[in-house]
Image (cartoon, rainbow over all chains, first blue to last red; front, top):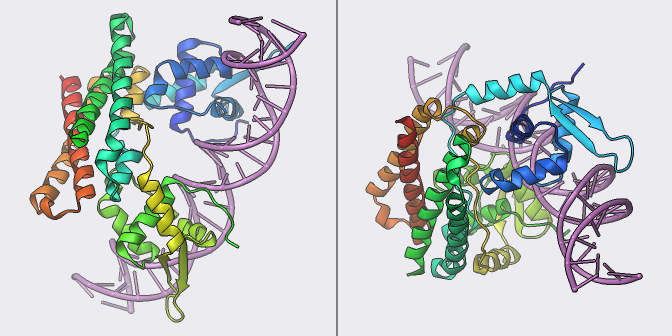
Length: 169
Length: 169
DNA sequence: ACCGTCATGTAATCGGTTACATGATTCT
DNA sequence: AGAATCATGTAACCGATTACATGACGGT
């Protein structure tokens, strides 16, 4: 009966987290996302309540509600969900990401780079350090995919630090 | 009377384009955005029809409709619009952009990097060349802010080319 | 004349954000 | 015991995407 829905990146994030972590509540998902993925693809917590519902209605996950107490909702990925996820993982893409950097947008429209640079530089430095901390504290044991995205984050932040340093003069 | 609206990045893009180009139709805006800004912050063309309307209702721009023929709509920034734009340009921010890279998202969830790499590499290389073309053909004459964002794009694409090269092995 | 593409716009849908609310824990 | 924070969820709004449509124009 499952109504047909479009699967968005948000959908795959939920499916991916459920596959990795097993049965989870929206709050579990929230923490899971915040931990690592959230650094390069963050979600509003409300989406982690609504998206699993959407997925449940279409048969990609199952929903179980606690009887007593808090009546929390627990979600679990179904075979259909696994299949959809696996297919998506196999598909390659030539789609490129966009920078979508607000500070850069201001510069494009004529804002003073030297005025923007200090805070941006500071923020990027902090992010970079955070990533390097993660690596130091046992980055070798991270799953391969996670490690690679972490490397991407480090490369990217390193580049931004250079960029804003130049503008800070 | 102007109802109050929230100004989003989309709003500022419209205001910024209108300030730079003077009176424009949505189609003018579309071309303007596609030309340079669109490389790092793209918009659906429908937004360039609806957003000016929203802004007009709140007094940030004026709307004039052609009498005869196509009845196209022309928009022009108002003083209120200029003020809002100027203020936004002055505000600094420590907000960081997110990568939001779909290919990377797949890798995070366990997709095969070597499978994804070729197409991504190719696409990033093409984008990088495109940027370098722009620089060659008179990048010196670009407005300063535009030139800086272009540099950011080049730095970023260069980094991505390296990144995906490594994964392509 | 016809076809394809560019130009121009509206409408419907829906995902995402924001706001609101309350129950549990932990800390002082 | 009270304050602060974490946990958990719902509802409303609204911006963004998608789909649909038609008119103009340039080329064959």
